[in-house]
Image 1 (cartoon, each protein chain N blue to C red):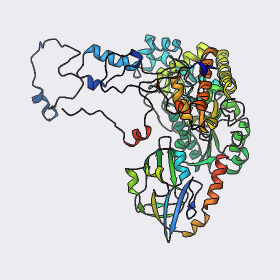
Image 2 (image 1 turned 180 degrees about the vertical axis):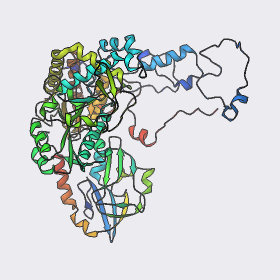
Image 3 (image 1 turned 90 degrees about the horizontal axis):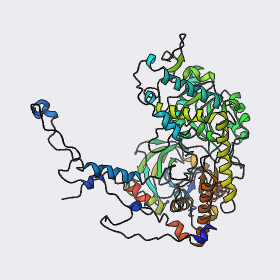
Image 4 (image 1 turned 90 degrees about the vertical axis):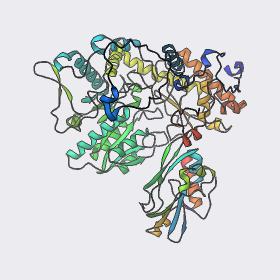
Length: 511
Length: 129
C-alpha cells in the first residue's frame, strides 16, 4: 500500500520573520504589493509635456485632490513578477484532479477557448445593431435549442448569471405562474438533502420553506411528500440525482403527487452531469430547472468564471420568461422580443454571460450526442470506481447505487478523532484539491467526491492511493492528519479567529 | 453532552429556562458541538416580538449559518449583548450563554416542549446512534 512507502512530511516550518531570497521557488512566499512599494518608483515614464500646462486646481475647484493616493510604487517587472508568482499558487483543474463534490470541476477544453477568441465573437459588442449581430444571435439560438433538447423542456432563458441566480429566476417563474391563476401560494418544499441555495431562493421569492425528510435510502419519502403537499404548495425544489449522488427512482411519482395538487416540480440542475444524453428532466415530470454551464457544460468554474445558469421550462411557464426573448422574425432574421407583458422582467444586464454561451456550445458541438452520452457514462463510471476502491476503508452511509458522485462519512476515522475536514486538509499534502466536506447535511461528517469524466484511470488511482494512505494514517498517526496540511505555504489556518477577528484590509505599519 | 433536567428543549435544539412569565432562551450543548466554533450571533432587539417555532435570529459558525427558533411566543425583554463580542462563550458553556429573555404571551406553550430525556431520545433518533 502506498502509505508504507510514504515519507512523513516535515511538520515544522522555520518561522522566519523576514522573507529571505534563498528558498525554493514553489514555496516562495510573497508580500503584498503595498509592502513592495518604494517612494518614487515608476513603471512608466511619460514623454515631456509638449502642450501648455493647465492649472488643475483652478479647473477642478473643490474636486481637486489634495492628498496623493497611497498607491504602491513599483517597477513594471516587479508588478509582473508579483502577479505571476501569485498565479503559481493556484490549484487548478489544469494541474490535477479537483474532486470537489457537487461542483463538477471538469476540464475546460481548449477548443472552447479557441472558439471564444475568434475575432468576430470576441469583439462583438452588445450595442451592435441586431442586423450586424446575426452570427452572435445564432450562437444564442443554437445553444438554446441544444439545451432544450438535452433537458426535454419547451423554452429557455440564458440570462441568469449562475446557479443560484437561475434558481431565483425559476422560482420567480413559478410565482408568476401561480399568480396568473389567482393565487401565488404560500410554501415551497425543500428536501433536507438540498443545496442551501434552494431554501434561500424560496425565502427570497417570498415563500415559506417546508423541510422534507429523506428516507433511509437517501431519497424523497413519497408518502411523506403526499402527506404535506396541498393547495398552498407552490413547488418542490428537487436535486436529481440528489446531493448524495443517488437518482430519485420515483421521480415520476413525485411529479404526479405535486401536479395532482397544482404544484410544480423545480429541478436544481447542479447534478446534470449524471443525466446528459441519458435522461431528460422534461420527460420525467420536471416543470422548470436551471443548468450550470460552468459545471455540466465545461465553461470555467471558480476564480470568477463567470458562471452561467440558464433556466429551461415547460410551455406553461414560457409567457413569464425574463425579457427579452430571442425570436426569429418573418424575414428570417433573429431579434430580441421585448413585448412580453407577462414576463417577470429582466434578471441580468444585456443577455447574460455570452462568453460562456460560446464555450458551452463549442463543448456540445465538439462532443455531439454520442460524445455527451459517453461523457455522462464516464463520469458515473469514475465515481463508482472510486466508491468501490475506497468503501472498505470509508463508511458508505447510503448504499444506494451512486451516479456521478459518491458520498462517504468519516465515521470510522472520527473514532480516532480525525474528521472529514482533517482528511480534506491532508489530501492537499498529496497534491489534490480537497473533496467537498460536511455536505450534504443528512450525512454526518460527509466526504463528497466527484471526479467527473475528465480523469483517467491513472489519475483516479493516484487519488485512491492517497485516500487509502490517509485512512491508514488516521489509524496509525492521527495527529499527522489532524494537523495537516504540512507541505503548503501556510499551515492550518485558525478559521475561528479569522472569522471572529477578521483583518479586512492592509494598513501601513507606523513609521 | 450536558442536558440539565430543569430546562425545556425544542427539536430545533434550543433550551428555555422558565421563571414566572420570563423564559430565558439559548442553544443546546449538542447544537454548539455540532455547529463547531461559533463566530457570530445575530439577535433581535429588546421589544421585538417572537413567535413559537419561528426564527428570532441566527448563529454563525465556521461551518454554517443556522436559524434560531423561539421555543415560545412573546416579547423580548433582554438580549445577551456579550455575545456580540464573545460568541465563543456559546461553545464554552451553552447553558450559561443565554441569548434572549422572553416575556411569554402564552405560558402554556411550554407544556409542548421536550423534557431533557425526550430531547436526548430525539437526538439519538436524529443521529441514528
